[in-house]
Length: 221
Image 1 (cartoon, rainbow, N blue to C red):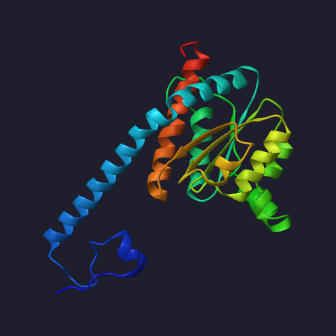
Image 2: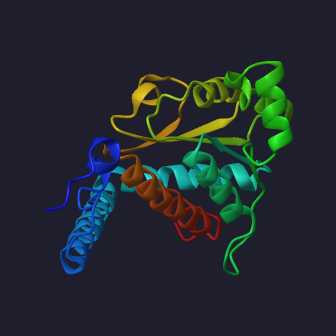
Image 3: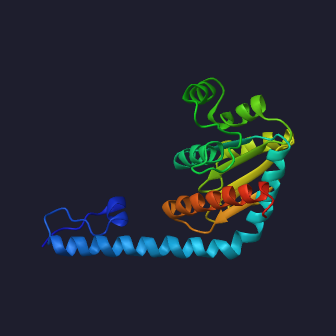
């Protein structure tokens, strides 16, 4: 009889054993776990259509107007959201198709700037200081936070608002501090307490937002 793995690892992967187990049973458990996760994210993504569909169109039109007026897109986030911020900027700047490239900058890309600001000033301002240096009225700030409560993301939104920039927030759970803030013009909340599902769904949200923005720029939205 094999012993179950306990603690956090056991909670995430209940099919794991500390001793050798029946390979067929383990593979069946893995398959079930994978299928359950797939169904969960598909259901979550489908729910976002009714929740955010109309507001995504509204945001895309506002983004298109900003770009047409010479605005630029600045993206930022922490951890996994940092990677998504880079992906989002890359999507707008170097689209995978013949779509129109749009000016976009990820504020998480320059490690030297991030570490200098974190070390010399404080981690809370690593995005706000960059917004202060590069942002101008008419630009767009897009911040991602799984919890919706990242202090440095909210700080950047506050700086962006002071400079007359449009702000777009992507959050999970119930929206956290982003939902309570008056400095986020367009907020898209993924109603899940799973970090993995939130970030997967946020990826879908910003890809849809990019597609809608392209349509708006082409006069098709």
